[in-house]
Amino acid sequence: MHLEPTDFDLVQTALKGDAASFGELVRRFQTGILRFFLLHHRLDDAQDLTQETFLAAWKSLRTYNPKWKFSTWILAIAHQQNALFFRNLNHSIRPKVVDPGEDFQMDIMEQPIDHAEFKELEDAENAENLWNRIRQNLPKDQAEVLWFFYVEEKSQQEIAQITDRSVSGVKSILFRAREALRKIL
Image (tube, rainbow, N blue to C red; front, side, top):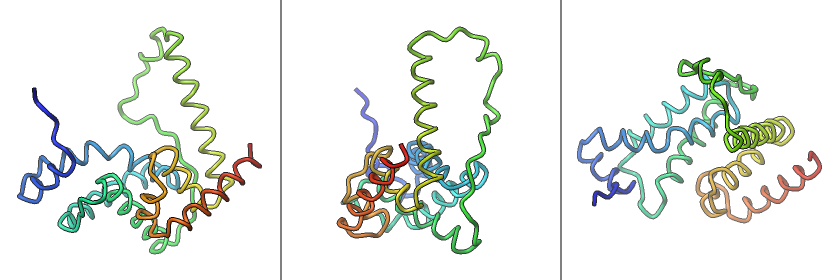
């Protein structure tokens, strides 16, 4: 039986010069990092920031502390890249542009969709609408904390590490975000 290497194992082999191990870490986490950036950016900027996040991770891989989950560590780097983007370029938050990308194929639309797949698509659309409302109506820090908590399923302690806040600060932001969300919905 072949076991898949842990994130820590991949970090260790990447530190020994195995670029494929770091490539596997990128494969495992790039979608989540991209989705995080899509909270605040158009697709092209989100893709650039995702690449910059992994470049920064590669450069600082020796600083990875195994007491953190790798996903928490990489999200902390993404959070820093996001702050740096707004600080350096003085951009305002822009709505996400929906781009089907190069992989989109029209013939997929011609295939019949079974009921379970339709329900899945409907749920995904409802979730996207909810996140659009959150992005438009909540302050950035509240939207991020909600994202980390509900989508990335991070604990309050992990969110505190990612955002460089205290746990009580995260709890407070989460409380305010939930209250604001009740008013919106």
